[in-house]
Image (cartoon, rainbow, N blue to C red; front, side, top):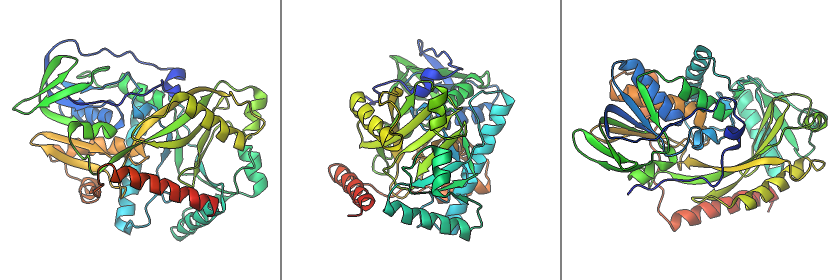
Length: 428
């Protein structure tokens, strides 16, 4: 029996989305030449690519949750296509350039789909702020700035008064602004991608896969029904180990977000002058935040290994983080609070692999899921059917996640890493 990840609360993004789509669950046995497991960014991109290559074939997508309730509809909506602030310092110049090419290619695909199908998802080329809240963070941000200068990437350094004016907070000790980021409403993007799939793609929701029997074709059991499939594409990200794959090369962390009720004019002004902005922290345990269309505020903070924390506990934590930044805000500002699972690998490489004769999969978003997984899902299909490209060749060469030992060693290593980061931030 294949397990599944269930979330404790609904995604706030999905709760306020303007384009929710309905989704039926599988209710009969069927055959599909191509079966995709997972209706997130990778799975939807893989299905779209399959439909493009094989317009006369039936393509089936299965997802264990409701539309946009998986990890793809729970992230912060940042699409950073020039990630010098995130690229591992151990990466070679060639590997760094591959990451940039991968993200930019994913963004071009999404932009084309959004334009072609008029998907309303708050697409905003707003750029983003990179900010530090501690002395340790200031040192980290200075290193980022040096990397940007070395690579001749333009950025704007903010004076303290500019931080206060643009972000409405004096909590940040140092900040820069970069133009290479697009912000979206992630659930609206996912719903729009689902609603615009080609006609030969059928998606079933609330349909968790419970077994895959090897054969020719494969037999996939879901909702007590069976689907025979010749090719299977596993795009379940954090769920991939439940299928018996990559369990020692990726781990699951939960992160947590709160979305405010609609803001009054005065509250909106208190979050800075612009209607739309986003902040990503240079310290790994600090908060990501966004002001959204002048109407809402989102804050994402907190981590837990493998299991989701109780919602009440998360809400208290997020409220404390909010008040640290905006002490005049009401503590009950958040209307929605939720958790989301993130797949991490030890060295930052994604999983891109063949798991059987005709079973292939991708995983390891490493907190850059929208652009990266969109392109990896597309390249997964290209690789299976021999559609070679330089980007595909690079992806094969740079997708080798390091070994991660099992629990209890894994849990101990995660906890030690978190403690080390906290000590650095506290200056101890």
